[in-house]
Length: 287
Image (tube, rainbow, N blue to C red; front, side, top):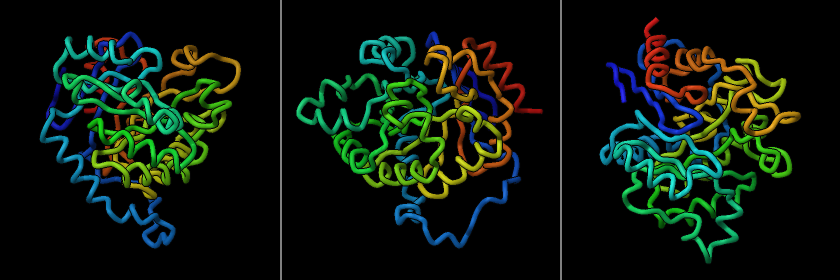
């Protein structure tokens, strides 16, 4: 773990991706997207202070997520997280993505999917889905297990998820729905919420489109934290594994988000495998 004044740096002991988190306080510049007269805001959006209070409650119990394990299907299961906790008592651990439908339809067998040992705190549950009712029910059912945060997956490029399932990274094309989903999640949990996403999908990969997604989700919901995998996703022609290596990394999008959304928190994910790489990227924050 490395920490500089005003900056939180995250690395990972996973074989896939590492992340850097920062809450930008240096710059007051922001994009002029905000509509103060937006009458369509969901009722839960007027209670953003509640989410900040939730974050404060969690922050008092654990160190901030300077060091975390990225969520990965078929990797970050209970056994992997147990090993991860042995390696670091402060790392934030993420579950594999669980479809909301799985949680709802298996409510008589939830321990199989949601149970974890107390030593795994702090731990984040990542859920995915495109049905608001099931997302709400899944969030409510997870409360009994005491997760420290709920993360919504808008980054998975798997054909089973983004293709036939029509969620995961495909949801980046529908920021209004993501905002509604995040409001539903926040309304049904007592812990902070966050979104995991890419920087774009197929040809929808401009910085302006990414800003539009971030702005709409944060305006329509209490979401203040976005985990940014700094590659776009290609939904046709390459595998999920190739989607973690072939689309080029664009860390400049992440740095631009820090500048343009100083009231939000962003975590950088993708292509960071060593502490030296963390240090190199962190130095870029000062220039």
